[in-house]
Length: 376
Image (tube, rainbow, N blue to C red; front, side):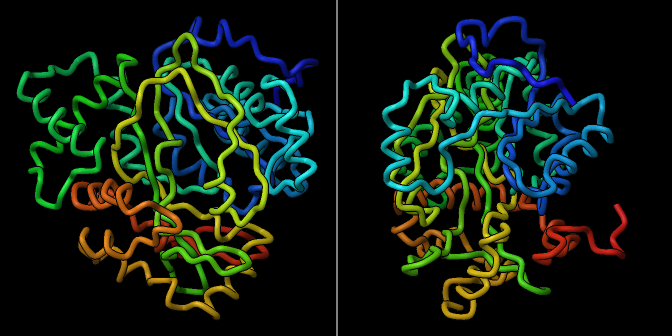
Protein backbone atom coordinates (compact mmCIF):
# COMPACT_ATOMS: atom_id res chain seq x y z
CA UNK A 1 0.00 0.00 0.00
CA UNK A 2 1.38 3.40 -0.96
CA UNK A 3 2.03 5.82 1.86
CA UNK A 4 -0.63 8.51 2.10
CA UNK A 5 0.32 11.96 0.89
CA UNK A 6 0.13 14.88 3.29
CA UNK A 7 -1.60 16.97 0.64
CA UNK A 8 -4.13 15.95 -1.99
CA UNK A 9 -3.76 18.98 -4.22
CA UNK A 10 -2.81 18.22 -7.82
CA UNK A 11 -0.35 20.13 -10.01
CA UNK A 12 -2.32 20.03 -13.24
CA UNK A 13 0.37 21.91 -15.16
CA UNK A 14 2.63 18.84 -15.10
CA UNK A 15 0.07 16.05 -15.40
CA UNK A 16 1.13 15.22 -18.98
CA UNK A 17 4.88 15.08 -18.37
CA UNK A 18 7.13 12.05 -17.98
CA UNK A 19 4.60 9.47 -19.15
CA UNK A 20 5.73 6.18 -20.66
CA UNK A 21 3.99 4.48 -23.59
CA UNK A 22 1.11 2.26 -22.58
CA UNK A 23 -2.33 2.28 -21.01
CA UNK A 24 -3.21 3.02 -17.39
CA UNK A 25 -6.49 2.04 -15.82
CA UNK A 26 -7.80 4.58 -13.29
CA UNK A 27 -10.24 3.20 -10.72
CA UNK A 28 -11.92 5.10 -7.89
CA UNK A 29 -13.56 2.97 -5.23
CA UNK A 30 -16.13 3.59 -2.54
CA UNK A 31 -17.83 0.52 -1.11
CA UNK A 32 -17.52 -1.78 -4.12
CA UNK A 33 -16.49 -4.96 -2.30
CA UNK A 34 -19.24 -7.00 -3.94
CA UNK A 35 -17.78 -6.51 -7.45
CA UNK A 36 -14.18 -5.39 -7.27
CA UNK A 37 -12.48 -8.80 -7.61
CA UNK A 38 -14.45 -9.71 -10.74
CA UNK A 39 -13.91 -6.24 -12.21
CA UNK A 40 -10.14 -6.23 -11.76
CA UNK A 41 -9.66 -9.79 -13.00
CA UNK A 42 -11.66 -8.95 -16.14
CA UNK A 43 -9.49 -5.96 -17.13
CA UNK A 44 -6.04 -6.36 -15.58
CA UNK A 45 -4.47 -8.42 -18.37
CA UNK A 46 -5.27 -5.76 -20.99
CA UNK A 47 -3.75 -2.86 -19.01
CA UNK A 48 -0.14 -1.89 -18.39
CA UNK A 49 -1.01 -0.67 -14.91
CA UNK A 50 -4.09 -0.15 -12.73
CA UNK A 51 -4.15 2.72 -10.24
CA UNK A 52 -6.80 2.21 -7.54
CA UNK A 53 -7.74 5.13 -5.29
CA UNK A 54 -10.29 4.53 -2.55
CA UNK A 55 -12.22 6.94 -0.37
CA UNK A 56 -14.79 6.73 2.41
CA UNK A 57 -15.12 2.95 2.40
CA UNK A 58 -17.18 1.33 5.15
CA UNK A 59 -17.15 -2.18 3.68
CA UNK A 60 -14.39 -4.67 2.90
CA UNK A 61 -13.16 -2.80 -0.19
CA UNK A 62 -9.75 -1.76 1.27
CA UNK A 63 -8.97 -5.35 2.25
CA UNK A 64 -10.06 -6.65 -1.14
CA UNK A 65 -7.92 -4.03 -2.85
CA UNK A 66 -4.86 -4.98 -0.79
CA UNK A 67 -5.35 -8.63 -1.72
CA UNK A 68 -5.64 -7.73 -5.41
CA UNK A 69 -2.49 -5.61 -5.23
CA UNK A 70 -0.64 -8.53 -3.63
CA UNK A 71 -1.90 -10.79 -6.42
CA UNK A 72 -0.77 -8.37 -9.15
CA UNK A 73 2.19 -6.46 -7.62
CA UNK A 74 3.64 -5.61 -11.02
CA UNK A 75 0.50 -3.84 -12.20
CA UNK A 76 -1.62 -2.52 -9.31
CA UNK A 77 -0.80 0.53 -7.19
CA UNK A 78 -3.13 1.69 -4.42
CA UNK A 79 -3.74 5.07 -2.78
CA UNK A 80 -6.09 6.23 -0.05
CA UNK A 81 -7.74 9.58 -0.76
CA UNK A 82 -8.52 10.82 2.73
CA UNK A 83 -10.55 14.05 2.37
CA UNK A 84 -14.30 13.77 2.86
CA UNK A 85 -16.09 14.24 -0.43
CA UNK A 86 -19.37 15.73 -1.60
CA UNK A 87 -20.47 12.71 -3.60
CA UNK A 88 -23.45 10.48 -4.16
CA UNK A 89 -26.90 11.72 -3.24
CA UNK A 90 -26.58 15.15 -1.61
CA UNK A 91 -28.98 17.19 0.45
CA UNK A 92 -29.84 20.61 -0.95
CA UNK A 93 -27.55 22.20 1.66
CA UNK A 94 -24.64 19.92 0.70
CA UNK A 95 -25.26 20.55 -2.99
CA UNK A 96 -25.17 24.32 -2.51
CA UNK A 97 -22.06 24.05 -0.35
CA UNK A 98 -20.30 21.98 -3.01
CA UNK A 99 -21.19 24.44 -5.78
CA UNK A 100 -19.71 27.30 -3.74
CA UNK A 101 -16.33 25.61 -3.26
CA UNK A 102 -13.35 26.55 -5.46
CA UNK A 103 -13.06 24.13 -8.41
CA UNK A 104 -9.83 22.61 -7.06
CA UNK A 105 -11.25 21.92 -3.59
CA UNK A 106 -10.14 18.61 -2.11
CA UNK A 107 -13.79 17.96 -1.17
CA UNK A 108 -14.95 17.81 -4.79
CA UNK A 109 -15.07 14.77 -7.03
CA UNK A 110 -13.15 16.66 -9.71
CA UNK A 111 -10.07 16.89 -7.47
CA UNK A 112 -10.44 13.25 -6.45
CA UNK A 113 -10.40 12.27 -10.12
CA UNK A 114 -7.46 14.57 -10.84
CA UNK A 115 -5.57 13.01 -7.95
CA UNK A 116 -6.14 9.54 -9.42
CA UNK A 117 -5.19 10.74 -12.90
CA UNK A 118 -1.97 12.24 -11.55
CA UNK A 119 -0.98 8.86 -10.10
CA UNK A 120 -1.12 7.16 -13.50
CA UNK A 121 2.15 6.95 -15.40
CA UNK A 122 1.26 5.86 -18.94
CA UNK A 123 0.58 7.91 -22.04
CA UNK A 124 -3.04 6.76 -22.32
CA UNK A 125 -5.65 6.40 -19.59
CA UNK A 126 -9.06 4.82 -19.34
CA UNK A 127 -11.53 5.08 -16.49
CA UNK A 128 -12.24 1.71 -14.88
CA UNK A 129 -15.37 1.45 -12.75
CA UNK A 130 -15.51 -1.18 -10.03
CA UNK A 131 -19.12 -2.11 -10.80
CA UNK A 132 -18.29 -3.26 -14.32
CA UNK A 133 -17.18 -6.64 -15.65
CA UNK A 134 -15.19 -6.06 -18.82
CA UNK A 135 -15.20 -8.22 -21.93
CA UNK A 136 -11.57 -9.39 -21.59
CA UNK A 137 -10.90 -10.35 -25.19
CA UNK A 138 -12.44 -7.17 -26.62
CA UNK A 139 -10.59 -4.95 -24.14
CA UNK A 140 -7.30 -6.69 -24.89
CA UNK A 141 -7.78 -6.18 -28.63
CA UNK A 142 -8.47 -2.49 -28.13
CA UNK A 143 -5.50 -1.89 -25.83
CA UNK A 144 -3.14 -3.87 -28.06
CA UNK A 145 -4.35 -1.87 -31.06
CA UNK A 146 -3.57 1.43 -29.31
CA UNK A 147 -0.14 0.21 -28.21
CA UNK A 148 0.66 -1.02 -31.71
CA UNK A 149 -0.91 1.83 -33.67
CA UNK A 150 2.44 3.17 -34.91
CA UNK A 151 2.94 -0.08 -36.81
CA UNK A 152 -0.30 0.29 -38.72
CA UNK A 153 -0.71 1.80 -42.14
CA UNK A 154 -3.70 4.07 -42.70
CA UNK A 155 -4.70 4.28 -46.34
CA UNK A 156 -6.79 6.99 -48.05
CA UNK A 157 -9.58 4.39 -48.38
CA UNK A 158 -9.44 3.80 -44.59
CA UNK A 159 -9.78 7.54 -43.98
CA UNK A 160 -12.74 7.82 -46.35
CA UNK A 161 -14.52 4.99 -44.57
CA UNK A 162 -13.76 6.51 -41.19
CA UNK A 163 -15.11 9.95 -42.05
CA UNK A 164 -18.21 8.43 -43.61
CA UNK A 165 -19.17 6.63 -40.38
CA UNK A 166 -17.85 9.33 -38.06
CA UNK A 167 -20.12 11.87 -39.72
CA UNK A 168 -23.14 9.58 -39.49
CA UNK A 169 -22.47 8.90 -35.80
CA UNK A 170 -21.73 12.49 -34.86
CA UNK A 171 -24.99 13.76 -36.30
CA UNK A 172 -27.03 10.68 -35.33
CA UNK A 173 -27.76 10.04 -39.01
CA UNK A 174 -26.70 6.40 -39.05
CA UNK A 175 -29.31 3.97 -40.36
CA UNK A 176 -29.25 0.20 -40.19
CA UNK A 177 -27.46 -1.01 -43.30
CA UNK A 178 -25.46 2.20 -43.79
CA UNK A 179 -22.12 0.42 -43.54
CA UNK A 180 -20.38 -2.84 -44.36
CA UNK A 181 -18.19 -4.91 -42.01
CA UNK A 182 -15.16 -3.71 -43.96
CA UNK A 183 -16.13 -0.07 -43.42
CA UNK A 184 -16.59 -0.69 -39.69
CA UNK A 185 -13.19 -2.37 -39.48
CA UNK A 186 -11.60 0.62 -41.22
CA UNK A 187 -13.50 3.02 -38.96
CA UNK A 188 -12.11 1.35 -35.84
CA UNK A 189 -8.61 1.11 -37.30
CA UNK A 190 -8.48 4.85 -37.94
CA UNK A 191 -10.16 5.74 -34.64
CA UNK A 192 -7.60 3.75 -32.65
CA UNK A 193 -4.74 5.25 -34.68
CA UNK A 194 -5.98 8.81 -34.03
CA UNK A 195 -6.46 8.01 -30.34
CA UNK A 196 -2.89 6.74 -30.13
CA UNK A 197 -1.74 10.06 -31.62
CA UNK A 198 -3.91 12.07 -29.20
CA UNK A 199 -6.12 13.49 -31.97
CA UNK A 200 -9.33 11.73 -30.91
CA UNK A 201 -10.55 9.78 -27.89
CA UNK A 202 -12.21 6.37 -27.93
CA UNK A 203 -15.69 6.41 -26.36
CA UNK A 204 -16.76 3.13 -24.73
CA UNK A 205 -20.11 1.86 -23.51
CA UNK A 206 -21.64 -1.08 -21.66
CA UNK A 207 -24.90 -2.89 -21.04
CA UNK A 208 -26.76 -2.74 -17.73
CA UNK A 209 -27.55 -6.15 -16.23
CA UNK A 210 -29.41 -7.38 -13.15
CA UNK A 211 -28.78 -10.82 -11.64
CA UNK A 212 -31.72 -12.35 -9.79
CA UNK A 213 -31.39 -15.99 -8.82
CA UNK A 214 -30.44 -17.95 -11.93
CA UNK A 215 -31.86 -15.33 -14.28
CA UNK A 216 -30.11 -12.38 -15.89
CA UNK A 217 -32.11 -9.35 -16.93
CA UNK A 218 -31.43 -6.28 -19.04
CA UNK A 219 -33.40 -3.35 -17.52
CA UNK A 220 -35.35 -1.20 -19.96
CA UNK A 221 -35.58 2.08 -18.03
CA UNK A 222 -38.52 3.26 -15.95
CA UNK A 223 -39.21 6.13 -13.58
CA UNK A 224 -40.88 4.46 -10.61
CA UNK A 225 -41.31 7.30 -8.14
CA UNK A 226 -38.73 5.58 -5.96
CA UNK A 227 -35.59 3.87 -7.18
CA UNK A 228 -35.54 4.32 -10.94
CA UNK A 229 -34.95 1.28 -13.13
CA UNK A 230 -31.91 2.02 -15.29
CA UNK A 231 -32.08 1.96 -19.06
CA UNK A 232 -30.39 -0.64 -21.22
CA UNK A 233 -27.04 1.09 -21.65
CA UNK A 234 -24.23 2.52 -19.56
CA UNK A 235 -21.72 5.09 -20.76
CA UNK A 236 -22.70 7.63 -23.37
CA UNK A 237 -19.43 9.49 -23.81
CA UNK A 238 -18.05 9.77 -20.26
CA UNK A 239 -16.06 6.52 -20.46
CA UNK A 240 -13.07 7.36 -22.60
CA UNK A 241 -9.72 5.93 -23.56
CA UNK A 242 -7.59 9.04 -24.11
CA UNK A 243 -4.05 10.32 -24.38
CA UNK A 244 -3.08 12.58 -21.49
CA UNK A 245 -2.17 16.00 -22.88
CA UNK A 246 -1.36 19.44 -21.53
CA UNK A 247 -4.69 20.74 -20.27
CA UNK A 248 -6.19 17.33 -19.51
CA UNK A 249 -8.14 17.60 -16.27
CA UNK A 250 -11.46 17.02 -14.55
CA UNK A 251 -13.68 19.95 -13.60
CA UNK A 252 -16.82 20.16 -11.43
CA UNK A 253 -20.00 19.43 -13.36
CA UNK A 254 -23.63 20.03 -12.43
CA UNK A 255 -25.38 17.28 -14.40
CA UNK A 256 -29.16 17.04 -13.93
CA UNK A 257 -29.35 13.95 -16.18
CA UNK A 258 -27.09 12.05 -13.78
CA UNK A 259 -29.42 12.92 -10.91
CA UNK A 260 -32.32 11.41 -12.84
CA UNK A 261 -30.43 8.20 -13.58
CA UNK A 262 -29.38 7.72 -9.97
CA UNK A 263 -32.75 8.71 -8.44
CA UNK A 264 -30.92 11.41 -6.47
CA UNK A 265 -32.35 14.90 -6.06
CA UNK A 266 -28.95 16.58 -5.91
CA UNK A 267 -25.54 15.53 -7.23
CA UNK A 268 -22.39 17.42 -8.15
CA UNK A 269 -20.02 15.35 -10.23
CA UNK A 270 -17.04 15.77 -12.57
CA UNK A 271 -16.34 16.13 -16.28
CA UNK A 272 -13.17 15.50 -18.29
CA UNK A 273 -11.97 18.48 -20.33
CA UNK A 274 -8.92 19.22 -22.44
CA UNK A 275 -9.39 16.09 -24.52
CA UNK A 276 -10.48 15.75 -28.17
CA UNK A 277 -13.93 14.49 -28.98
CA UNK A 278 -14.62 10.85 -28.25
CA UNK A 279 -15.98 8.67 -31.05
CA UNK A 280 -17.94 5.51 -30.48
CA UNK A 281 -16.07 2.20 -30.43
CA UNK A 282 -18.64 -0.23 -29.03
CA UNK A 283 -19.67 -2.24 -25.97
CA UNK A 284 -16.95 -3.19 -23.50
CA UNK A 285 -18.60 -4.28 -20.21
CA UNK A 286 -21.58 -5.45 -18.21
CA UNK A 287 -22.67 -2.77 -15.73
CA UNK A 288 -23.68 -4.07 -12.28
CA UNK A 289 -24.91 -0.93 -10.51
CA UNK A 290 -28.37 -2.41 -9.90
CA UNK A 291 -26.82 -5.02 -7.60
CA UNK A 292 -25.04 -2.65 -5.25
CA UNK A 293 -25.51 -3.09 -1.52
CA UNK A 294 -28.47 -0.91 -0.58
CA UNK A 295 -29.88 -1.02 -4.12
CA UNK A 296 -30.33 -4.74 -4.76
CA UNK A 297 -33.34 -5.24 -2.49
CA UNK A 298 -35.14 -2.24 -3.99
CA UNK A 299 -34.34 -3.38 -7.51
CA UNK A 300 -35.69 -6.83 -6.65
CA UNK A 301 -38.91 -5.14 -5.58
CA UNK A 302 -38.90 -3.22 -8.87
CA UNK A 303 -38.67 -6.55 -10.70
CA UNK A 304 -41.70 -7.81 -8.80
CA UNK A 305 -43.76 -4.66 -9.37
CA UNK A 306 -42.62 -3.80 -12.92
CA UNK A 307 -41.66 -7.07 -14.68
CA UNK A 308 -42.34 -5.41 -18.03
CA UNK A 309 -39.28 -3.19 -17.44
CA UNK A 310 -36.90 -6.17 -17.44
CA UNK A 311 -36.01 -8.42 -20.37
CA UNK A 312 -34.15 -11.68 -19.94
CA UNK A 313 -30.62 -11.34 -21.28
CA UNK A 314 -30.88 -14.14 -23.83
CA UNK A 315 -33.99 -12.63 -25.35
CA UNK A 316 -32.46 -9.18 -25.32
CA UNK A 317 -29.26 -10.23 -27.07
CA UNK A 318 -31.28 -11.84 -29.84
CA UNK A 319 -33.05 -8.56 -30.63
CA UNK A 320 -32.28 -6.78 -33.86
CA UNK A 321 -30.75 -3.29 -33.75
CA UNK A 322 -34.10 -1.90 -34.89
CA UNK A 323 -35.93 -3.63 -32.04
CA UNK A 324 -33.39 -2.28 -29.56
CA UNK A 325 -33.65 1.22 -30.95
CA UNK A 326 -37.46 1.12 -30.82
CA UNK A 327 -37.42 -0.04 -27.18
CA UNK A 328 -35.35 2.83 -25.78
CA UNK A 329 -37.10 4.83 -23.06
CA UNK A 330 -36.58 8.55 -23.88
CA UNK A 331 -36.64 9.38 -20.15
CA UNK A 332 -33.23 7.71 -19.89
CA UNK A 333 -31.71 8.18 -23.33
CA UNK A 334 -32.65 10.52 -26.13
CA UNK A 335 -33.82 8.46 -29.12
CA UNK A 336 -31.23 10.18 -31.32
CA UNK A 337 -28.45 9.05 -29.00
CA UNK A 338 -29.96 5.58 -29.15
CA UNK A 339 -28.91 5.50 -32.80
CA UNK A 340 -25.33 5.06 -31.65
CA UNK A 341 -26.23 2.07 -29.49
CA UNK A 342 -28.02 0.50 -32.43
CA UNK A 343 -24.79 1.13 -34.38
CA UNK A 344 -22.77 -0.77 -31.76
CA UNK A 345 -25.17 -3.69 -31.74
CA UNK A 346 -25.28 -3.91 -35.53
CA UNK A 347 -21.49 -3.86 -35.84
CA UNK A 348 -20.02 -5.49 -32.72
CA UNK A 349 -22.66 -7.80 -31.26
CA UNK A 350 -20.19 -10.71 -31.38
CA UNK A 351 -17.93 -8.90 -28.88
CA UNK A 352 -20.65 -8.81 -26.19
CA UNK A 353 -19.24 -11.48 -23.87
CA UNK A 354 -21.86 -13.66 -22.13
CA UNK A 355 -19.26 -15.28 -19.88
CA UNK A 356 -20.06 -13.07 -16.88
CA UNK A 357 -23.73 -13.94 -17.18
CA UNK A 358 -22.91 -17.65 -17.36
CA UNK A 359 -19.90 -18.02 -15.08
CA UNK A 360 -20.77 -15.71 -12.19
CA UNK A 361 -23.44 -15.87 -9.56
CA UNK A 362 -24.62 -13.16 -7.17
CA UNK A 363 -26.15 -12.98 -3.77
CA UNK A 364 -26.55 -9.88 -1.58
CA UNK A 365 -24.51 -11.39 1.26
CA UNK A 366 -21.40 -12.45 -0.66
CA UNK A 367 -21.62 -10.30 -3.77
CA UNK A 368 -20.45 -11.53 -7.16
CA UNK A 369 -18.49 -14.78 -7.33
CA UNK A 370 -17.53 -17.43 -9.84
CA UNK A 371 -19.64 -20.53 -9.90
CA UNK A 372 -17.99 -23.39 -8.01
CA UNK A 373 -17.87 -25.58 -11.08
CA UNK A 374 -16.37 -22.86 -13.30
CA UNK A 375 -12.87 -23.46 -14.65
CA UNK A 376 -10.96 -20.58 -16.25
